[in-house]
Image (cartoon, rainbow, N blue to C red; front, side, top):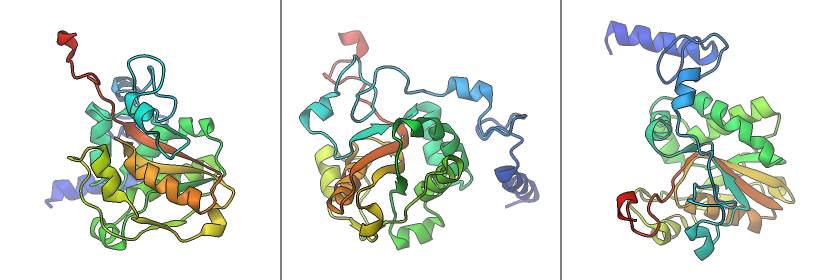
Length: 244
């Protein structure tokens, strides 16, 4: 790292708690926000028709095709952004730049009121994976959301084994990949609670669904999920826009 990079990193570490610039474009901000008004307006907001269960974008009001076939174990899921463009880039950057957890939390916070949870939980990593990266982004986001909302966070679940990369897998393969990988270590803490799972993105929902299933077996009353982004099938019937 050269001198200019070190100076830049020093400025960024200071801005982590004293934010003077937009995390996305570097423009000066004056209200301490993580994302400036211009970048916020350009984000791919998930603010049109959504599936009432998984929260992913749909072409018209009603359940998405996936939820019609097989519902997730979460009672409801929501995400402020679509997993495309700058929304997807925020997710990827957060895996390399720790300070982006504050950016994610700022964008996710307004949706918490939809759930009224008793506590927040996060999708855990194995100790080996967390040590390799240096942090668990989902945990940092959950901690920040807890600090800002006043809702307690539970460190109640462990990931007991490594799972393969999900990116190239279909829904059935993803479900098999994560099956049995979570263990509730604080059953007393989750029993009878309305819990909100915090994670970065929801594609097929296999990960949050498996975690919700484990939490419900441990006695959780209801389990929801809040992610920064969610994917959606642009062509659910196999036709591109110009082929309809």
